[in-house]
Image 1 (spheres, rainbow, N blue to C red):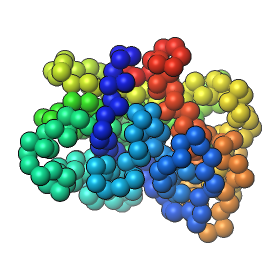
Image 2 (cartoon, helix red, strand yellow):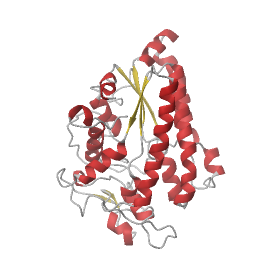
Image 3 (tube, rainbow, N blue to C red):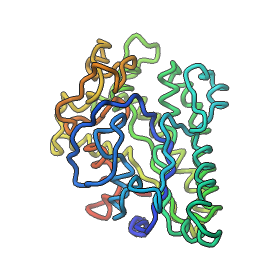
Length: 344
């Protein structure tokens, strides 16, 4: 599919993303040091630019955050693929409140906004045909809610089919509206993120997980791969139904692992890279090792930000730093620049 990514460089960029939940806003973001000088990353989730900024750069487009006119985002804080009813049935109603931030609600908001973006149905069809739709890491929030609220790895596997089905459904609805180019990214290797390394790497848990040679939680990474495999299967079915539509899978898992394997060459230090840049080591045990305390998330008063975020992979325990994000997005397009394509 090497030729497809170049076809995604179009005039308009539409984003629907069930992003990882925003925690609490940090007072001041760290200084931006990136090859892409545009966009407005949120200090709660990054030290600078977000994945959408780097994707836009890869497509030679302005950041979708630049204005409301031709580029619009439907990315909410504390978003998820599933809705409150799903979490209630899963026994998580006490710790999760999604409200109108489910993926379906974001899709409805997008549909309702078309009247303000188009002067006629024909114009809308034209814009949708010439847009790139990005669904980024759908399900990551849902799984995070599950693990943070005490669900086991086995119980969380029960979320995968629902999350993937919802993603597939939304892509289908976008195609029915006229979308012809869709990029869906998979989940990162969650077992390499400080939040999970702290929460699930606790020896006192009954489902204590072992580590792989990179220092990541092996079973948690298997969970990520299972999600991505199910998602790719769902996208393959959509391609069969709609051969005229470009549907790409962005393998952020493989791209991140490539960064991890080459961390020395890329300037990351082994004893620092797994620590959250914005967090607290007061949790003790594994939390102290990874500078993550679920009770003192990024933005809480008194928490410090690391001196150089570019030496860390994670900003707050669950989100990547802009340096790591830039490298991951670059890895998605490695086929055009070097060898092998991670867009499938």
